[in-house]
Length: 240
Ligand SMILES: *Cc1c(COP(=O)(O)O)cnc(C)c1O
Image 1 (cartoon, rainbow, N blue to C red):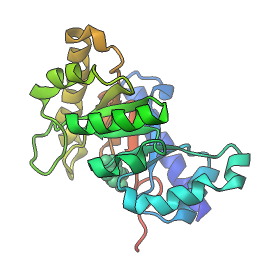
Image 2: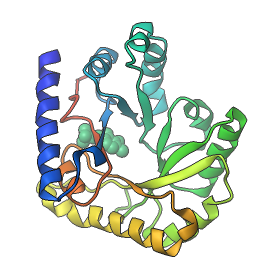
Image 3: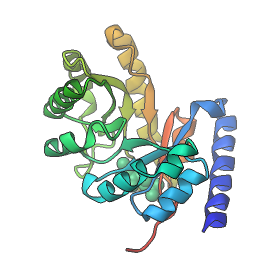
Image 4: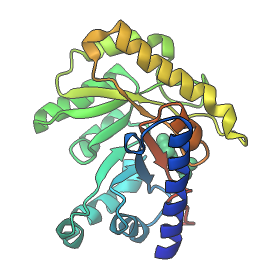
């Protein structure tokens, strides 16, 4: 198992490095989230023992057992191997009480009612939750996220929430056999980030871009991704 993981990590690292070189970016500006939703607890611990630090899960129901086992794993804690958890899936308002306080980052902020629920829970816990606003750039009906033209007023409305900090934008590109075809999606998200910086100078915290998955992460890096979310190509996909 480990050597398969080591190989995948090396290959991914090489591909990230080359994408950074092609686009004149520094390797340190791109962080990896290992998406463990398709793999077992053992594989997830293996990933942590190999130095992966950021874990992504997209459903609380599926992540709960893993989260509990890892959080109480004293050996991992002693080795400094406790992860930073990223919630990357769409978040139901009634799951906010479970997720906030356990997952450090939320990548799927897509509506005001969710912002309100996160803010309320975070304020009870006395924490500030860094969030990515999910934008539906590709316009597919099947994708979550707010529409680009609603982004500016959404960001302004978020200002009322003191326990939630918008730190970036997130998107998912459609699956394409030819990854180059996804470029317009990532470029558009970066454009929105840049426009936000100009139009809403009061919200300078929105700097990061969570974009790129196994199939398209190199294109996303070339277009400015600061967080890439890698499942299959990094930690694999196991059958149930
Ligand atoms: C599953 C998932 C990923 C990772 O998918 P892979 O194609 O396996 O890399 C990334 N982001 C989100 C939001 C996901 O749900």
